[in-house]
Length: 275
Image 1 (cartoon, helix red, strand yellow):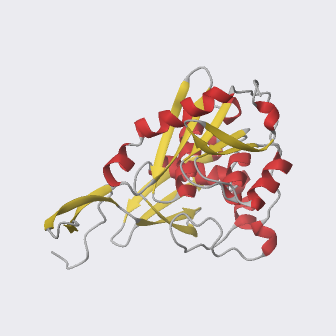
Image 2 (cartoon, one colour):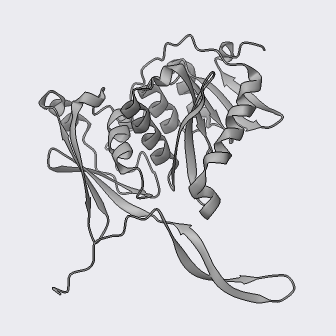
């Protein structure tokens, strides 16, 4: 034994001891399964780029999706390799890009070290926070009734959240094929990045369906959706005013506060066919 700390276990959850108090006055010892939260470092071309606090699962998808939604690459083929390195202090995602993307990488380089899934911590200027968002062009239409069906399908596949009650999910709904992919994470931005990577890896176009979120819709979520060409974002919580303004400019339909009995539409209502 050399005395060095062990490599980090990449399990997405683990049991933790806890005591439960009830109104009857009883105190019951036991344990609860909790999600793991791990520093995940993104390193491109051998240089550190960002550190996110994330659930250590679906890390290949995370590496690809983050690269796409941050504009570091535009296609799967521009990522040559992803190496996942477990370290005592966290996880390093070592990402190799094709040489043609190196200039973009250095222009976009940021250093982030923030709380769970924080997509803006550490950027260098206000202009970076409000970076230009591509406009989404899609002829997609959905029925209003499909929203409730889509959101109901999310909970059935949130395996980690059923186990821990402490993580967000991002899913992709196709009108004819249903829920095609779902990813979970302690950070809502991370869940969306992982979903973006999963879709890209499978060759599924985000233009053909809706992004489903179990979180509020912040401007970063809209920006990431626009980067992968998603025309519709549906969430259980409300958007921010900035998210609404950016979605309007980007041509993205925002539907929020989605419940079994209805939802609210904030931008581009024309994509709902039976209003």
